[in-house]
Length: 130
Image (cartoon, rainbow, N blue to C red; front, side):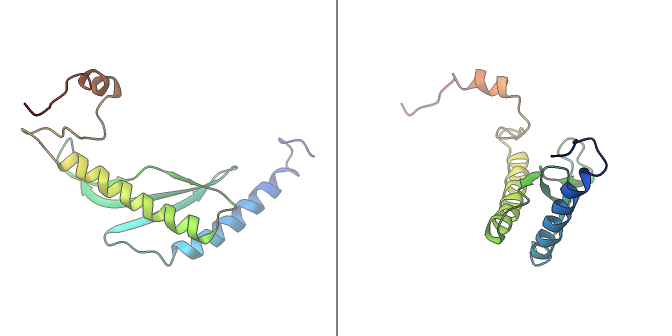
């Protein structure tokens, strides 16, 4: 095995990445969801899939390009894994927007950006039927 910092060693990693990127891009070119675009990138270890769409910033109320989280995709994934990951990326982005938009008394009580420690504190306050 060569030295990981060596120029002669690195191209093998990129060759594998480029092959995986081309294969997955072919599958991605067949996927659509209205109003959404998909980004596919790679680093030395894996691919990343991300959705983007035009939306409204939940803090400012201004129109803004929204980006979903980055989903890790193995270089060795099969077609069904990849397509399902793209589906999950859209599903998570739609759910995220719903959580930001659903309001109770003017606040997004199920919002995805609520501090986990604040949720922990609130979890001790239970509601039940009388």
